[in-house]
Length: 222
Figure 1: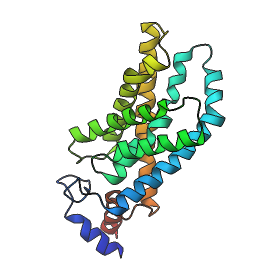
Figure 2: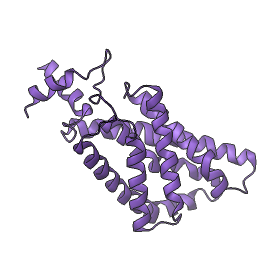
Figure 3: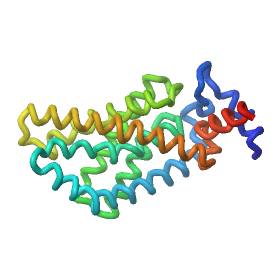
């Protein structure tokens, strides 16, 4: 399909703003949506395993003097949910992408065991809530940052406080929460948005609204 045809076909899904939406009804996923969400998730699952194995031990060592600071790395595990939501732009995309990534991480081996599946669900739900509030009509950095922050908050309050750091004082728990939310906003939010933009500019997302936005901008400058 040519760039001109792709751009034209996406116009019907454009809002009054600057974002291209997934074709309605939102619940009607295309085969390419499912396949791409799975591919994104598998890739991130491998990244999770590598991060768990080779990087996180260093994070733990660096934060040994003040363990709550280690939660500044949390955003790494939240990126798939943000990217899934930004690329697919349909309800359930964040949860599906994050859960599949968590399953891959579990299969490859990690230090947290089956608990990563609950984490994946909570992380995905946090992102879903933000995009649901926005009615799946806004996909800029603010939406991505908000999704990353709420994802982190839900993960920490709903699981990590009780599973990983139950002995922390409430002061340390609050510092842990703030560190995680900051990481969710910066690493998952800004990082996930930047990654999606980079993929779209490279032409990897031409079948998706994020790719259509890039094609339309290029056509407008031509």
